[in-house]
Image (cartoon, one colour):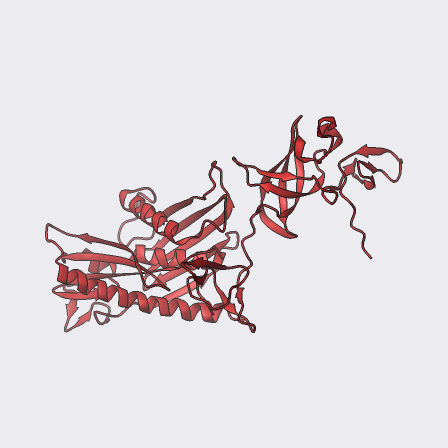
Length: 172
Length: 238
């Protein structure tokens, strides 16, 4: 059993900090069989730069979409954080042709990456990669399916809806 | 009851001058909080719970700690408490606790996050502040907040040229030189984080007495540290 502030020999991934060259623990834990520090509690989950997040869009404006961050690196959050996807962060090319309504709608579940902790109360998110974008969307309680990289389709009516679609995960 | 504190070297409740009261610890007492603990020492009972780390509401990279100390109306002996929050003594302690926790919690690991500390005094029988610090430490450990070190606190008094450990309410009321001398030390490094005392009248605390009280209080903290360690070993077993 290791308490916060105790010295450890091996450098571990999480739950430790370096104090003048001495590695110390920061939370309650224990050293496992390989001598690594293992935390007792689960780590406090906070979005960091580069984290992959899932968020639900709740409001869109001309220049940005606001979203509640629901999970960070596939770990569910206790309370949601606020995030913003700016128009210029939706994709890398032809940003000037983008229209916010054709990328996101309120209620969509979006996979995004944290690019900045922001200067105010929002985390800045980006979907400028093929694997980031809308993963779940609904139209009148009907799940939409990804059709191509900027359209989603209702399988009953064959009607397409414009979205910034994430590259679908293909499960084997 | 007689005003005497020490009869033939024993105190009113039968303890020797350097004995702690019996203490009991509970963690996870509040399910809706991120971390909670209940620390009782004799008849003093303090509950602490933590909300957070949660997103901060101010435009700051570094998080903020808020402390809220409330005493239950039924906590005191005698008449019911009229003011339960925000009186001078508890506001002062909230500020002290905030400073102490800011020096201990590693905010670099949890950017943009605030921590709220709520303390409620359920029973007041002396040494409430020390019990509160211990309860907050346990709650922070329970919540898994990254900390450089953890704080342990203990109080002592000085009566008729004898230093007594862990003063009760009645011992604190008697007109001794020092009613409550409180310190908080860091568990792992052994550094003293906080020293505070209350005195009656104009009598001053001499250097020798301070040294004696400090030595006794640090010894008391060691005992509390041992208790908390034992408890954590038992509770968080693998």
